[in-house]
Image 1 (cartoon, rainbow, N blue to C red):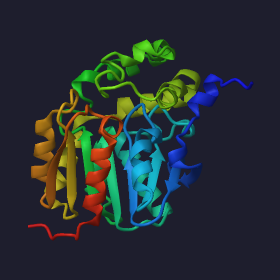
Image 2 (cartoon, helix red, strand yellow):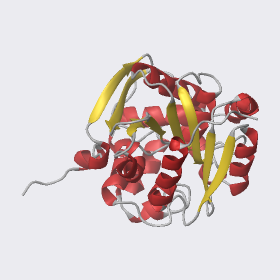
Image 3 (tube, rainbow, N blue to C red):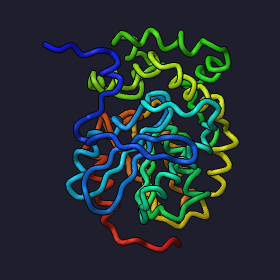
Length: 300
């Protein structure tokens, strides 16, 4: 009987996502997953998770859509960036835009969650050419970046070596369900293999921790406020699919985002915390599929 090592679990990807592929981008190498066919949907995750976050949604959408889940360098990735590479949120948003270009995608439905939603706001207000539609699930907005629940991360990242110590308890399962980890991001426990893939890379790989630290230290509310100030100029249709029980991202922020975007609609997702794609993937998948199929309406 073969054993499964921590390294194996760190590199695990859901079969629903298909095999990992790699793009060589100006900012570094980026892993991604590409399954299905039809109108392209690109999924952008947030800090300290990876493409596995979208596995339940991709499984439901891939029969009708081309689903591309990126593995961004946010602390749960497998391809560390070159030492010294820029990994601020605006740089990461640029990497997403570079990925769309490298894959020669057009009329993309861009889907973001958590800090990935902040990146989507930055991208659509700076490099919107390849984006046809925008979906924002519970995510950072204006001054809630990072959310207060995870405000401890920035002070921890400022102290060399402290981030390494901070992640060590998450070798064990129980600490992962505390509020400062995943306890207030999902209502129910995450599949163990997916959860391992979120926490083990930062435990075992100094390059992964370096990238996460750079992203955390590079985050500034000036970035999200600047993006939000430009949202009224966005003409692409937008769906704001916000979790009604979210403990990190207030429901009112979702409504404000919908009001900021001229061609948008707001749809709540019940029975879910921040990670609606974990807690209620049926509802989120249904909303995305219906939204992509809708005829494009001109902004008022």
